[in-house]
Each structure stands twice: as structure tokens, then as C-alpha cells.
Length: 149
Image (cartoon, rainbow, N blue to C red; front, side, top):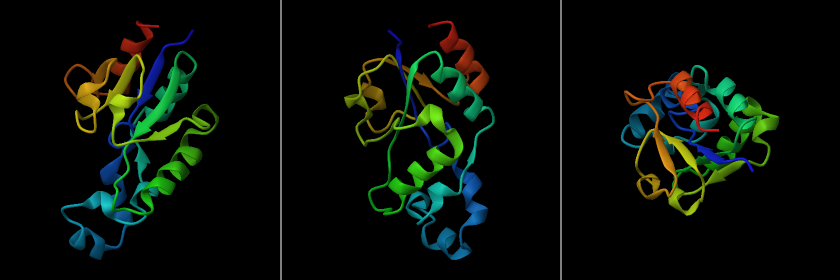
């Protein structure tokens, strides 16, 4: 039986700031303290280097899901995240997107996330803290997880 792996989206698979130059400038001013509430922003982000290849490779080894939160006040975020996953991750991510503000409610072996918020700090499996000294990029994450299969 394959181990269960969850991977966060924002600043783990997608480069959140990469969308800023694609939204109307007025939104950058009106939403300066809540950029994640800009309508349509989640469909505009570029993948982080190596993220798509890593997701594809890890999907062959683990039972892999995308586990992300979606801003409550951004009505397009849920559908934008789904569209991004369909357009960028394709078949390995088919029906494998979970949106939750309580990531600890998902049982699994590993969670790759860049933060401790939204229940990550209470996740029952191992948290792989993306963007830290130990796991600065996708190469380090993939190498570590391949050693755990």
C-alpha cells in the first residue's frame, strides 16, 4: 500500500508573487494587506521551479494529493485553484485536490507545506517544511521522500 502524501499549493507548487504583474494595478493597492483576496489571482500564478516534475514523480511513488486552503473572502479562489491544477498538473492530479482550512483533519504520512498555519502544526504525519534550510527546494524534498518510500 502506498504512503499518503499531501502537497500544499501556495508558495510550494505555485509561485504566489508571480501573479502580481498580471492583475490590475488598482487591486495591488486596494488589497495590499490581503493579496490572496484579489479576484482571479490563483489562476495567474506560475509553478515554482521543479514543482510540476516533482509532483509527477512523487505521484508515481505515493498516493499524492494537493491539500490547500482557499481564502474565504475570495469567491473565485476555489475554482481558480481547480483550474490551475487541471491546466498545470494534468492526469496525476485528477480528482486529487482538497481545499480545507483544517489540514490536520486529513490523515496521511507526509505533508509538504511552507507554513504551520491551518492545522499543519497538528498534522498527524510528518511535516516537510518547504522553503527551510533543510528543504529549500523541490530537489531536496524529492530526494528525502524517495528515501522514505
